[in-house]
Image 1 (spheres, rainbow, N blue to C red):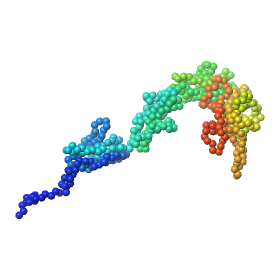
Image 2 (image 1 turned 90 degrees about the vertical axis):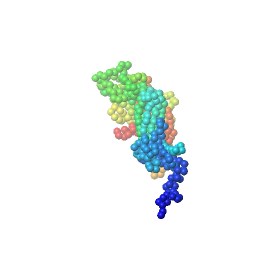
Image 3 (image 1 turned 135 degrees about the vertical axis):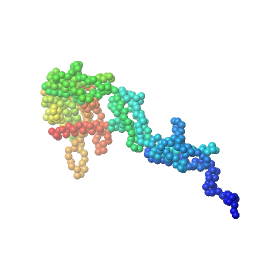
Image 4 (image 1 turned 45 degrees about the horizontal axis):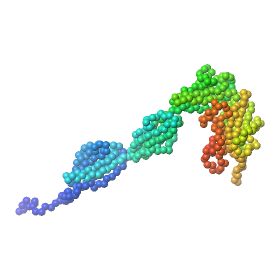
Length: 492
């Protein structure tokens, strides 16, 4: 009979599990997972692996914190400071679901045993985060500048990938990209609302606005520096005022401020400051001054109210090698005569033309007339100066002067099968008109004055493939003005 104790005697044979445990206990404590960087979108899930070999160890998951003490999430399988979207898996991995911005950072898996072994690895979690503007400021928080100051704007944005910052003003985009926008020597046109836009192709771009003011002495624009009228009629003198801070605007005549009366009205709307004169009398003719004052100074411009004609626009074009002079005249009464003189640039003597038998005059609108004269005999090629004036029953207007280059007339060679017709050639660089020959108080020409400035520049001959040059650009402006006036002639 076999003793029951025989079952426990003799040789003891280990099970497979026991053998495996012994093997594991013989292995040094180590982490077999390599460190990784995980990039995810907000709302997704990430699993951070941590495979450990060894025995009698404690596993610890921490979130690194550069500004304070690290946060222990799990220790020995026990939840410590883990957030609700974190879970420790049975294989020791850390799962983070429904990722949000706060989950970005470094996570450390650490194993510690009784032999003071402590291997560790770190995983980095990066979230694709839409851009967000963190800061948009002007240097020293100064948003009100003066002419000549330097404007420096700084914009900082967060997000991953790192957002690209661009700068905008109105519908325009600056060429520069980056955190800082610098504009030296600011002028009043630099005032306005600036936009910082940050884009990293994740979600929608972020943007923020800042408003900049530039203080400057008033700037005045007079479109018509000479206005023609007559007794018992009504006339409006126009003056545009740009300023920061807002200017006080007055009209003057003979050094005396004008006030509202039954016959004289001051009308203001936005930048427009107009003077309306009703039932005009002889004493109303003369020089009127639009005066604007703010804390930075005073600016003035004058308008002459005359009973003689007033010339507004003067353009020289060329057809079949013949110069064509076109000008616009304002006159309440009918025009009775016209005079033009010309000379080569550099010469002293003016040549007078008597155009009465060849001149064309047609009304354009109300009291505006279009006048055109063609040099049928042509002029020798070269640079010329031209002056014109017109007369009504009250007398002659001031001379209006311009200069232009007269080109040699020629016909292009037409290919077979093309129709032959009259070749129209516009002079490449009609210099656009200057102001009329008026007293010094009117000589305040600006680009906004309504009179196109005189120029002495010239351009090369027109070719089949013209390049875009400043001269060609002037040509385009002049041609456009001529065609506008000619379209009026065609409609009449």
